Amino acid sequence: MRNLLFLTFVLFTLCISAQSDQILTGKISLEKLKNSDHSEWFLKNYNSYKPKKTKLKKLQKALHKGDFKFEIFFGTWCPDSQREVPRVIKIFENISLEKDDYDLIGVNRYKDLPESYKKRAKEINLKRVPTLIFYKNNKEVNRYVEFAQISLLDDLLAIVLQKNYKHSYFSN
Image (cartoon, rainbow, N blue to C red; front, top):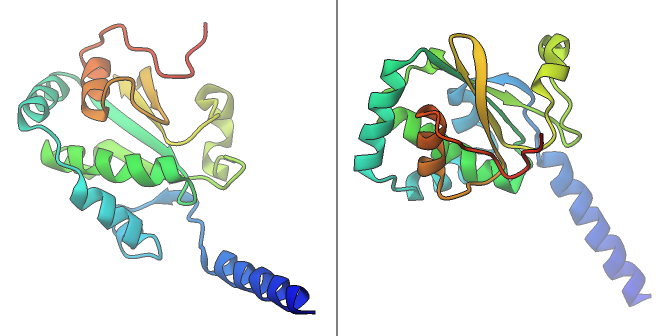
């Protein structure tokens, strides 16, 4: 009987916590992310990340030479997104990248794209999150997927400098 009571309590607790875990989907403003139920992980990872200033300057210089835009597909439920997205935002803010130059797009656990992206679903080909897609002159030049090959900042720099960068899941 005790085991049954304990199991019931555990299941009840899990159900309650799952209901309060709001998954943000669609285009999300940075302000909404910072002021939602997800602010705890976002601010913790944002504040703890200390990017190297010399590399930030290189990235800033390289970005301002080109016409780059970014789409960041992520899941508020995903540990990799919770680690990487705050870091990417911190990098963007440190190099004075305008908020109009990137979009934050939340997806559900099935990585379904929001309705406004359905026409581009094949082009986006979202398999893992986070996925940061780099566009130069409105054409995709590369993407960062899930985790770094070297470090987040080094990987972003390699992509912007158009070095021979391949993300972890790249296949021909």
